[in-house]
Length: 112
Length: 113
Image (cartoon, rainbow over all chains, first blue to last red; front, side, top):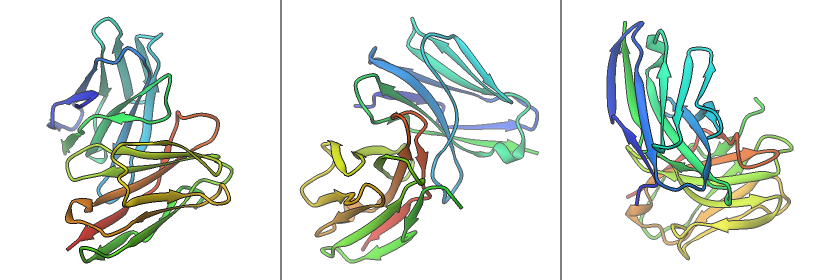
């Protein structure tokens, strides 16, 4: 059973566009929600993370929006660049454990 | 480079053989995690160490899998009697003060023929 559901599976945007990737979860024990960026042949790299006590967090061109009541969170990439082309994973961690539960990933392509 | 390192980066083995992977975490990170990632999927948790103690193991970690972190520094993951279904990227991550902000290594890609 997939603990964190991610969509879309793939996304193509023009340079300067704002891709949005969505994730949903059911486990109310989740209290930490990171986003990871992964390039081919590399391990995932932490981009930005949020806790459920805030509705939005922004770091540079990356913004997480969090809706606690809907159990959904999303990643927005402002002014997207070709160098942002990568696979993005959302994840969640329960306050009682040490492991991350990852979504299935979104392959983003930014066209110049 | 002070990041998480993994060795080897690629391993091709025949079904039934044993393989061992090594992970060197970021210096002074006392927490170490192993994940497995198959094509088109997100990483799946395998096991967690705090210092030398293995504190969590996933149901994914069958009896053929064993992990160690003997001195609380580097870790090894061994797979005995490999099966084709073991083909995947094996990722190691480390963290310092808690389970958040896990930093991942580049992974070891295992192919079982």
